[in-house]
Length: 288
Image 1 (tube, rainbow, N blue to C red):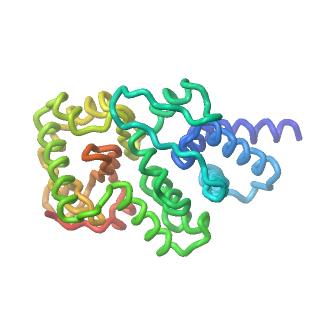
Image 2 (cartoon, rainbow, N blue to C red):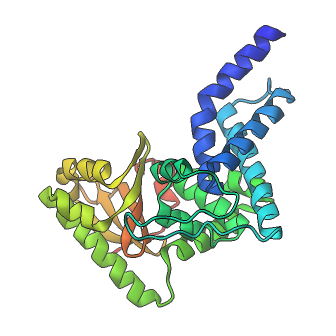
């Protein structure tokens, strides 16, 4: 029995970084994220997982449900605000009872502060749907089981969360500003203009592809300048109604890649690079 328990613990530890990242982006608190991950371990250790084919997916679902309960509880007790200054380098006041200043450094390293502030304005269900789908590529069907809704409703929740993160009080004007940011990103990428990229990227930008995640403006800008050849063939498009970039096959008949952007205060906070055929087929693409 001890050997089986140790094997299960080893498998859980392999998934811990991913689970912590999910919980951290959901909750905006390292302490609460660790609590959520620990609760997932308790549930795993008490469950019969012999029939579970995808342990990572199972654990993500458990962490998502735990985070949803925590967010709902937080809302019900009028949580202390996570709002913090977006001015680069400005000191961030800590609420009473909050963790020490080391928390801020760790938080900024893992989650863009600007994005976190906006995420805090979403309802728990919107936040969960947006974070799981847009940041971690969890299918709407799985999101639906966590929030107790239909896949269609889960898609709508994520869409509402996405619109609120992007901010669209005046849709036409907002789209024009976002298109200008994408234009600047594309021009800087094509020209290998590192400084130009830094001007349009949030300092804590996160670039997520199917091969991994890169965080921080300098690291993302370095990667973007290296794909100048890809940027030269990219075209503007609306992806689920938001400005993005698309790449087609040489014959122009097949969509092979999209770059989706999340904007915060007219800077790019998240870049999602999608190449998977199944995921591409679920994106509403309107070539500009």
